[in-house]
Structures are given as C-alpha cells and as structure tokens.
Image 1 (cartoon, rainbow over the protein chains, first blue to last red):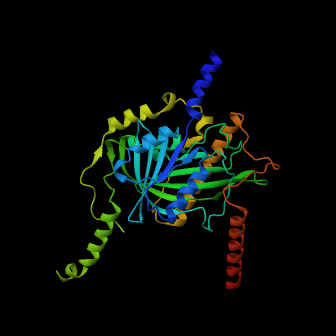
Image 2: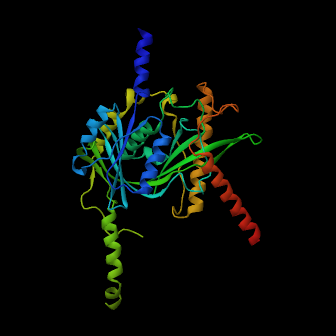
Image 3: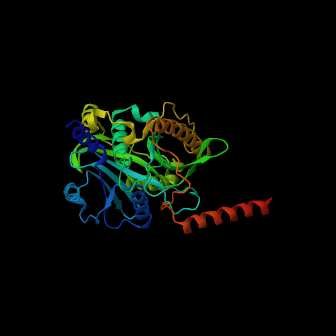
Length: 242
Length: 117
C-alpha cells in the first residue's frame, strides 16, 4: 500500500496536459509563436479555434473533454494585439498578458537548437518572490512549463533552459540551449528562441472567469496606447502655439 | 514611447492572491525538485536601462548561466544524467534545413565583416 500511495502522490506532478487554442484571425506571426511553444511543451494538446470571445469559460469544458488541466489561449485582436491567457482549469487562476516584442524560432539570429521534448530547466529572477501576484504567476509558469518527469515524449537529458525575468514591470522570456565546452568544463548558452515580453493585464480567480484579483495599474491597452500616441502627435502644434 | 494614461481601476487583492497561490500549489508546495527543475536566482539583475539591448542580454545570460550550473549540480545530486550521450540521436526542435540556413547566414555575415575590414 505504501508503494501505491507514493505512486498516487507522484501522479499529481506527472499527470498534466496543457491545452493550446486561439481565437479566429490569429495571424501568421502569433500562429508561429503558438506552434513554437507547442513544440517546446511536449505535454501540450492543440485544440480548434475558439469562435466566440464572449464565452471563453467554455474552454474549461473543452479542457475537461480533452483531459487537460491547464490552458493557454492566444487571443489576437485587430490582427495586431495579442493577448495570452494562461490558466489552470477549471479552478483558476487565469492570468491575462499582453504579448509584445515577439521573435519566433524561425529567425536566423537565434542560432541554438535542442532536442524535441527534452525537459527544460526553469529560471526565475529574484523579483518573482517579492509580490503576491508575481508569486502566483511564478507558480503557474512552473506548473505549465515544466515537463513531467518520465513523460513519454520527453528525453532523459537536459539541453535547454527557459528563463523568466521581471524587468521594467514586464516579464521577459528567453529560451537558451546549454552546450558544454569540453575544454573549459563550462556550459555555454546559445539562444534558441522564441523571445517575448509579457505584460500582465489582469489576474482572475477562476478558469477564464471569476473575480479580478489583480489588475496592473501600469497597463495601458494597446488601443488606448495608440490613440494616446496619435493625440500627442496631433496636439504638437497647439502645444507649441500656447 | 511612454504611455500617457494609466488604468482607472486598480485592484490588488493580496489576500485573494495568497489564498489562490496556496490553493494552486501542489502538495503544499513540497514538490520534489526533479518534477519542476525550477530555480529562482538569489541575485538581482542590476540593470540601469532595460532598453540597452546589449547590456540587458548579457545580464540575462549571466544570471541564467548561474542557474544552469546550479541545476546541473542538483541533477547530479538526484542522479539525473545531464549530457546527451554521443550516440543518442533524436528529432530536434529546429530542422536540419533550418540549421543549415542559420549556418549559411552566419557565414555570409562573417564574410561581409571581413570584406568590410
């Protein structure tokens, strides 16, 4: 009985799946980002596009049907503004990010490579421990991005690392290859990609719904940002005049 | 460019967040390291200007490298192999064709620099 108990304990960490889905009109750039992440996360499952943005909570049910306990939604609006929703379904939390500065795996300046399915090391910078909302995000990231030990598609070697940094009020994501140098006995990192910056918009208490637990005071929606820029430009003459 | 207006309604329910975190953590946060492979850096990134690409990437690189050595030590402690065996072949994230493209791009770049000199 002791043995089976231990097995059950272990299955909490190993039995997990992440559902990937997107809204319609995602566009090539963000579609590439999505396929990159899917190829880097072996415990993922891609699902059909979501038709109706008003009923996102239906994703909880889709997750249950596909036996997934996490979900990532790429919600692209106006063809340019990409929002990334990451959730533990159905109990939550859900974090909604605005994604900027995306570089995908296809870009030639990303020279690294790694095995398909090798389990990544995860690196977080110190700031993630400083505030409740960042601690929550760190825990969610750890659960979503860490590949289960002994997963069928995983490899028993370690050749890449996902890094998360909190700088300038935003989360910076990097993925490096770890290659060892035989002579120096020291590892060397080469960037594999993708790259992105995640700006927290809101944190909800449940899977794609519930109360707002956190809303970022410094977040400006991309639409507002654009109109602000335009306004600032438009008023240039008036400001100079008076 | 700096945004001009900030959000009108600010919510930071610290208690709610902490409760959610407690709820979210698997087995009270006592997950063996082998399941997460996660480390948190103890040093802070002292960046004067995040928009200085070169300095920022160096700082990111250094901190990650530090964590990688730590992870490798932890792997050794838990009896996990780090390095791939030389006779182990498997599918990579990027295809051979893509890697060839990257290589030729690097070479042409190098050539360009050389001719410029």
